[in-house]
Image (cartoon, rainbow, N blue to C red; front, side, top):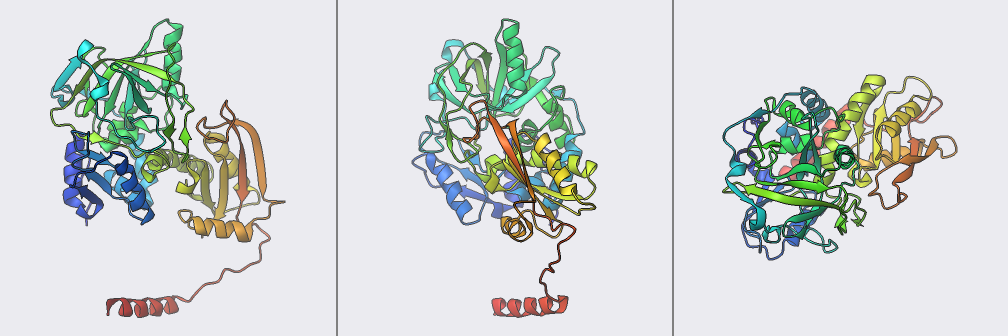
Length: 461
């Protein structure tokens, strides 16, 4: 089956409609009423336990007046379809598009500005949010992308969890300490708050762009254009003129106060733990707007496939390109779900002794989240934890094949890291090495074909 062009429209509503028509088996439509929004996450967990990761559409959730779409990024095949490719070529396709930077274009039609509210008319307490886990402090925004612009107009997109703090304020965390954090510090030095817009509900390619790993001088809105193969269609926000996607579902515009501190968290993070580590930042909302017919787009929190994939695909793609460019023997890079961003498997055709160590040093140096890297030979499937662990069991000698680097910056959300977010890092060489003498068991091609026929005959009868 040919892959439909899922980037021809930048509207999330069009994407969901076209995807459902093209791949009905990959979208689960829940029409019956759901009494508790926490059940959405529970459904995702139960499906994942059964090995299923469909996009989900909830038509009726108690207390939520909109349809909810979630689990969009839970499946690599679905992400590959967004980019018009297959899972085997996902990294190359993402990098090729993401590096083709295209400047956004302002458009006249802006559904996100259909309904505008400002001033005292704003009451965030009435905005419908989902509770994801029983351990969460409150219902949370999980798909919110904060758009900010530097003094030269260069934009930045980044994800930040947020909960309602007051009728006009969100409590949020800038825990990544990324470009938004640096922009906030620069605003503080100028003695002013940072103007921002938070959008909910964008096309999945816009959402992938918000996860891109790019230098501060690169505007992720240009990355979105590259992923679409056309300029991101934007409109200026009502108060501060920040360029945001014209077809987003909800827009909250205001300022982040660099001095204010408010309670925020705990929230179920990608580590699988409820985290109260936070910058305790305050976003004051001065204007909000929405479409007339909004969808409420949710990103499943915790260590869900969706949460991990949304950040992992850009991260893997960047690391794969860097490593293959520097080390031609590298053939694949994979961040397993089981590693929650902290583990990486890399496979290579080792050309000389010590090359695997050099590759692992590169990974540990380039990616600040990584704590453990395992290097394996090219005949190991790095997407299969069991094969990697088999290689570790049969090729690895602890006294010879590991090294540790200590005192490096890591993720502040890692519950085992220091309060400052520092961590040690481990490299495990599970390649066979030049003196390895074992011969891997196998079967003749004829025997495998006969076995396949026998199984097929019995399964079909």
